[in-house]
Image (cartoon, rainbow, N blue to C red; front, side, top):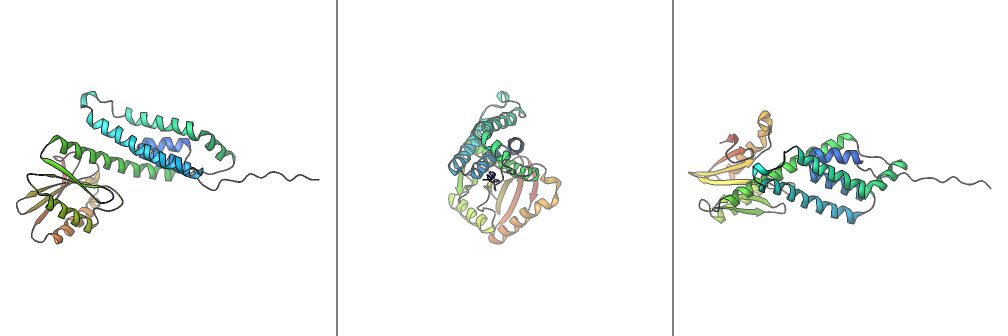
Length: 255
């Protein structure tokens, strides 16, 4: 009687290989590591570890970048060392907790995500990480000045930082409502702004990423935001300042 050869079922879900986790993490930070490792756990039908991985990634991001900003500048590690440290840790964790499953996945003919997706995920993570750093900077600045206060709004905890001697809480709440109405405060990405009341209106400082000044088309959404707010504040003049790293470094004014 002829024996039927055993067939191996090819995995249907794609994964991120160890090299791609390493590259994505180096490019986009610990949030990308969390996303990729969690995605692998989902592909391996392990949703519990996927959820835990996200939690650890968020905690690691807060500890790493919060710690960087709290440590005095002269005592900080060289900036190029820190990405290598958390990337090395991510690579070790992949080997430790997913190494056998990744090897089995490859042996059974399973596919991995391509490099274009890996780079795209890394770049998105980089943008989110920069946004997180900007948020930390604004919070740190508010802590450093006892007259400053911070309020958060919506499911994404959008932040408005303001001077209590310059604005009352009701005005800040009203501004948050209008920023939500314009779509600036959305359900996709946390935003942080600093607002100041000036003669005849309000001045909003919005953190942006480096390099935006080289692309004039990148200012279009902020011009639209200014125009939308102006319609909602017909009796007040709205001014926007796009700032980089700190409130004093203004790269663009929109009046």
